[in-house]
Image (cartoon, rainbow, N blue to C red):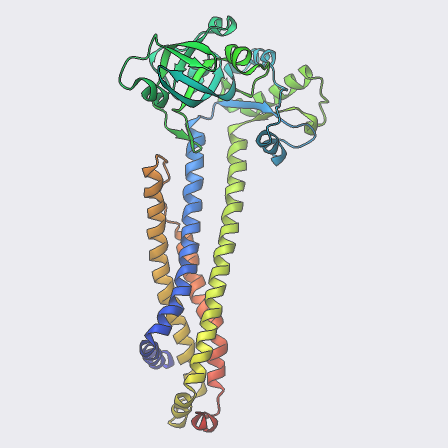
Length: 417
């Protein structure tokens, strides 16, 4: 009964002070919308990353160089690459040794780099992908025109190239590229194939690549004798960890490394399961950090509510005194002001949830426009969490001003000017 009587009075008071009410609600809206967007974006990001991993399949292991004396998940490895440190521990012989493992169906090695590529009077900086003949048998794409190069062409340093879809469109448009010569660096290469359109993977345009034979790229273009990474396709995917352990033992033996000290390894063997676990942990950490930032926004909004309610109590001291003089109890006054705070946060919560969903949908549409499959996922957990935060903020930050109003002496309140 107290609530039924107090609610109309509370809403009436808020209606009489529209400007103050709207500004107070705005602070709550921003915080609630931030919670919804963060939770929804986190779920969409997780789905996007897992989708990208699944596009590569789950029947492979990946081997890459590693900085010795650090774990394979350490940021030191990425830091070394970003600082231009060459990690040369994996050689072509390692690639051939992995190919002989029991559960390995096929394997490709690769090196990556950039070069100025010219055709006729046109030129561009293109990504080079030096790889072996098994690449198209493991990769999810396919050669749409012509063919891929052979092992013999790689070993004989043949100057042949397979163009990514965008590279072909840039230089040749709808014309036939097969048999044409392009210049990579200072060498002429004959186009023998064009890859099908692949799109982006992990925000990287897979269509803006020129594929060259591995040894041709190593010796003629880059002047190196190592591979940047290798990917081995498994005959039996259920034995991925067994194969990863076997590859680890094989490479430790070849590199004369201690078998009981993984941190000293100069390589890392990764499985799809490990990649999913690591990415899940990273995404979860990012999401928690963003939720903490959104919670700070809610806290600021809550402090704003307390401040506005405190000012409201001061301005309406005479009104409180009059209500108490005509029979209103301290509990009636407490509920009136507490409900004002709850109504503000409730309305702010509803508007914030709607705004958060709209922003999440906008992010999804924007990502799709740029070619990324970033799904629109409503996080119902985020919506519930936002609503709980909303009501909790109103109760928490409205309680002190409400108690202050309830404790006012009616006679003193009536004398207040």
